Image 1: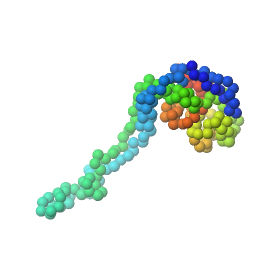
Image 2: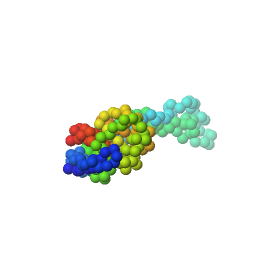
Image 3: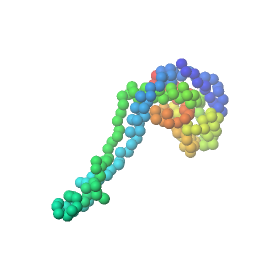
Image 4: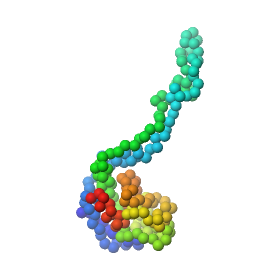
Length: 207
């Protein structure tokens, strides 16, 4: 059972917390994590790209010149793909790139991502996080105390408007909640900061 330090907002260690093996001590499965990240990136695509085929571009209704006798190559339309302003061969059209993977695979990828943060010592567990006022300076000070100066993912058990307002202008910081946590975000940020209450929620969901 992995143990990590428990910190207060001043950055001082106030003890240790035991993390469940079945959530934070899972062996990395790169194939599963890659599959889930690929799915998430595909699901984020807008799929609005579009181009016109030769049937959709305007003009080209008449044969540009007669078939034989001109010395030039034969053509049937000035909107053929080999002509300037012609149509596009196999033109892309709007489509939905979304797909889903089995729930067990998604859950395993989440556990692998969480476990990787523990293994690489990139996790900071806060005893609690409360702000009296939505002050960006105060939130930045807490992150500095935790030595979380790079890209930081801050995970809370639920919405907190005061913390949201204090965190939204800090560069490199993203706020997430237990119900919005995903593999891509966990891997994309250098430091994973989570409150003790949020750890219990995560373990409750994924254990």
